[in-house]
Image (cartoon, rainbow, N blue to C red):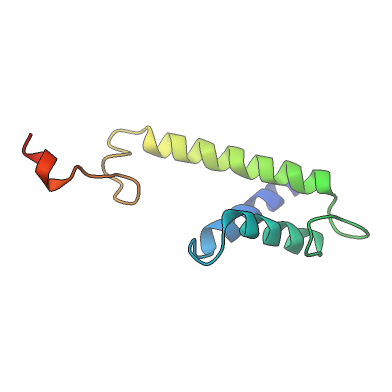
Length: 95
């Protein structure tokens, strides 16, 4: 249960923030700091341990990957999603 809460928190933090505001590394570092109660990502005291945070991040990546693969792998999952589909340039559409 603890890993699920961590996973969801990290996933929501990554999805809710603006991608152009900061790099992925900065987002992960901030998420780890908010979970552990520190800015550097290490734990001392009442926060979560480094291994707990690592396990939570791995679980979040696993769940996110599974959802994306199932979404894109569905019928027209890639072609019908304008957020990920890259259309052909107009010059090539004639071919």
